[in-house]
Image (tube, rainbow, N blue to C red; front, side):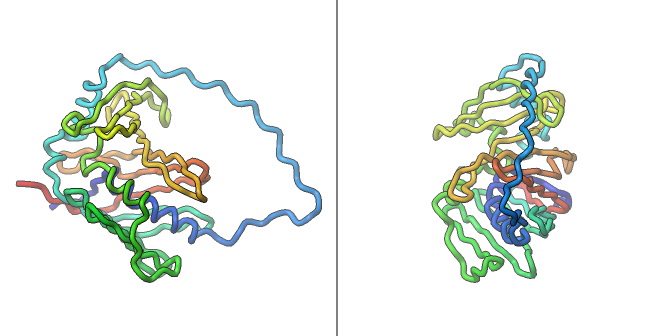
Length: 273
């Protein structure tokens, strides 16, 4: 057993819906609004800066970038050998209460996931068994298990396995193409377009120096009746038992001012022998 942290996109997809709901519950009552009859005028909009030119990186084929990413992360064989992961840490749920919430997240092949989240003295639970999902949200006064919505089931079913979508993409029936270059957090990255076997398009940004993921495009989320784009930034990479993985993930949802950070503090994992 390994006592450090391992992280995958699939577990993040499981937890994001629950985190966003807790964020709303953690926020303080509505913001103060002006009560005078005159409405304050917003400041004049600043002239937008011209878009930055794309960074210059060596021209590499998509397959070569994927191979370098696999090597940088410790190798596809090592990741495929991981059969289950249990991790714990803190979720920054944001909101005016600026809540830090302890969580435990478990992933097991094939496609099984469980998240528990402590909030205001209660324990929220979200589970996906590979086919069906349910959630318990006492912080909303819902003390009985509820089934996943159709959208939640779809997102959980489409989430990649422990190693992520890029490692071993060809064997999964996916296609990969270079979609340009872009600066992410001050670093030049390759933007990849991954088309899954069922026709879904996902984008990943790979650091041009380390060849580790800098950012991924996550499943969009429904908020206030509308779908919002979601991006997750991968940071603070460490080497643990031969595997290279991020310890901090920051999720940004379009239209939501505050990002959500997930920090991994400890983990147990098992591998095939």
